[in-house]
Figure 1 (cartoon, rainbow, N blue to C red):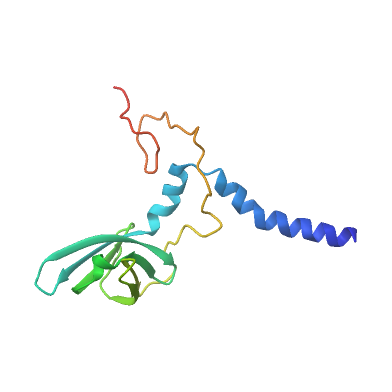
Figure 2 (cartoon, rainbow, N blue to C red):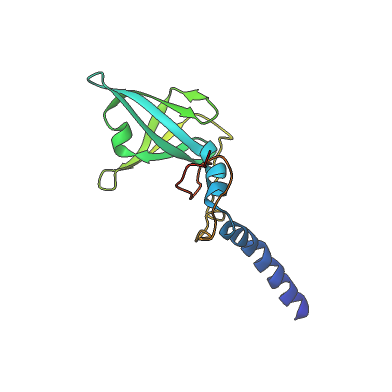
Length: 147
């Protein structure tokens, strides 16, 4: 019985550890992890107008979620990753007009997909306030440092 309790406790600790760590992440920590997975989407519509938008990688194989209005009606499209890599072949895999969502695919592998369900915090620490001299992505501060 004691061995069974020890195994159950160990499994629970392994499953809960990422959740506890995630709950302690600041907005800046989350942004630092997420930014590599954010993409810039650029394309040309059928009538020659340029369209731009953003999305984020949800799977290392190149699956990206974006808004449908970003890719709807594009004749050509390209996706630029945060590291500068550009992918010119973009396929729309699925979409939902009512929710304005689209799932697109680029031909990549081992792409940065930083946030998993285990790393997403359930709440932010409201006491967090960065006092650094530089504004960081994800910082909750809304002021410019004093000169």
